[in-house]
Length: 152
Image (cartoon, rainbow, N blue to C red; front, side):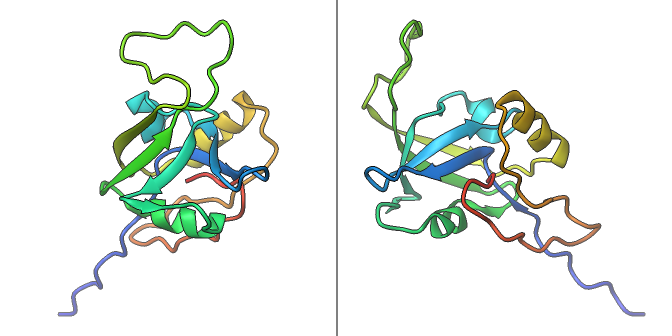
């Protein structure tokens, strides 16, 4: 009897929409996706800057390269070094919150986001950019091309 080939791993992200800051070439968080690992952790906020992925700096890297650094097999962990962005006026900081400009690290387990979760996030944030569907077919998943402003 023939055995079925092993299933390909499901490629997953952490529930962030990133963008390049044209002013200083930094990578900023544009959206924290509802239902994603980053939202569940609660540390990363819109406007925070991504400095490094698993200790590798992102400065000078193309956004596609940064996505490749963050994406990985579902359930595996990734450590991000972040810098808190500008805190909106009127925001009440809670005990333990990071101050504006403060560098911090967060380790997240990669989690697959359904098309529905991405659609909800798109509507909540009035976000017009669309990423390709990432729903894995039964037993396999091929990484979808990642465009600037795509979810990961």
